[in-house]
Each structure stands twice: as C-alpha cells, then as structure tokens.
Amino acid sequence: MGEAETTTSEVKAASRAGGALRGWLLGLLGWLVPGLGHLVLRKYDRAIVFFVSVTAMAGLGLGMGAKLYGPVIDRSQGAFVTLLHTLGFIGDLGVVLYYTLAKLAGMGEHYLPRASGDYGTVFFLCAGLLNLLTALDAYDIAVGKKE
Amino acid sequence: MDEPLFQLPHLASMTLFAFFVSLVFTFLTKYGWKARAKYFLWCFFVFLAVGIGLGWLMYPFPR
Image (cartoon, rainbow over all chains, first blue to last red; front, side, top):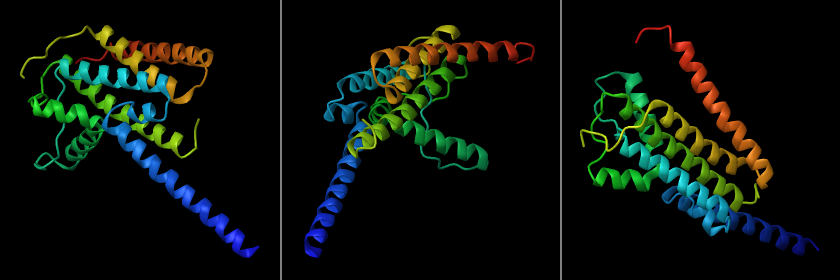
C-alpha cells in the first residue's frame, strides 16, 4: 500500500516536471516566433492572431523609423536614462526574431527627431511586450493553468 | 536608415495601435466568438476614447 502510494506520487511529480519542461519549451518557441507555441498546442485561431498582430506591429514600427534599444554601455546620461534604455532593450527583445533581423539589416540605429519615429519606437516596443504575454499564455496552456 | 519608409497620420497610428493591441488582449483573455467580439469592441473603443480624451486634455498646454 505504502509502496503503491509512493509510486503514484513519484509518477505525478514526474508528470508535473514533464509538463513544466514542455511549458518552458513552448513558451520559448512562442518567444522566438510569435504564435509558434500556440501552433504546436493546436490553438490555431490564437496562433494566427498573435502572429499577424505582433508581426504587423513590429513591421509598422520599423517602417515608421523605430529606434531599437541596445544593451546600455554608456552610462554618462544618468541612472534614470540608463534604466529607461535597459527596459526598452528588454521590451524590444520580446520580438527577438524581428529585432535580430532588423539589426542585421541596419535598421533602428538612429533616433528620428519626429513624431513618426516616436510612434515607430512605441509600436515595436509594444510588439515585444505583447509577444512576451503570448509566450506566457503558451506556457500557461501547456502546464494546464488555462484552456 | 535616416528616413522612415512611411509616415502615418496621428489618428491612423492610434487606430492601428488600438486595433492590434485589442485583438491580442481579446484572444489572451476571452473564449468564444461572442465574448471575444464584445470584449474586442469595448477594448478598441476605450483605447480610442482615452487617446482622444488625453489629446484634448493636453491641448491647452504648449509644446
């Protein structure tokens, strides 16, 4: 009896660990390519909506002249600006695929002193933040916290 | 790239932003097409209303 209970609890623990690992993997997939985590989970409607929305926002942002934040090396502008740039960098990394492609294409290097550039920066940043949310959603579905 | 590929009017930028963000919020939080349609419309129009409202509030202040 005691041995059977131990075996059952071990199986449950192993199942939870496997679910968590799957959750992390699907979250990672969703982070790398918007909607891919949901596609693997066969949540096709969400996969399409997330891919189209995040891609459109990142594309619109880059087209409008977004400034892409990089890792902060120069801290001469003070702690507050350094913090803002670091947060911007983390947000931009939310769409790591488009961020990498844009950097390779030489986009987003300069700050454009006009409204369009500001809008572009916000569009790209929000695409990243939305994609982080969708990746967390894929994790939650994979571990059974959501439908 | 020193020039943007294109420039959108302020209202068009805000509308597109509200549209895509509302769409993602809707599919993250709601299930069923009726609930989704209702929440999307609510979220979309609240985004627009708040944006336009804040714009009017800032109108008296100089740049």
